[in-house]
Image (cartoon, rainbow, N blue to C red; front, side, top):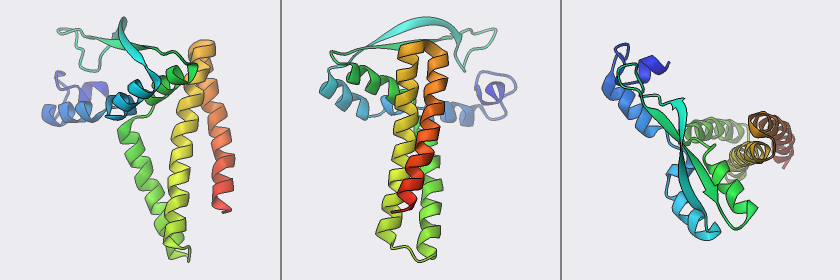
Length: 168
């Protein structure tokens, strides 16, 4: 897909749309929540050069991404920053739409609207928090394999959490 979204690629059918999509591809860390988190947890951010090609990179115009490094007085602050970089805003919005459809279905089947919406919000939140946090902790402890293991464990835990939420 990279060639078809990259506005600098000759294969991109609509460079304006590709550029817009890339600009929308942000994480929670790229929103105003970053400023609040940095202030509350005293997080310091720095960039690290990598050899990983950016999505806008082409053979004629090579561009590498920059990784983020976080320092904070507490481990909780570091985990929070890393977890926020793992939650894409577009993905959160799509998940919100899916949970909204689930809530609408529950309301249609007789659930009280406030209860259905609250359950959907809890499911959405638990999914984002568990997978991003355990993925970040796993990475901090064991690197990329730990990240995948953390996400896997989080998925299992989230299944149990969502089943408990649905019983409410």
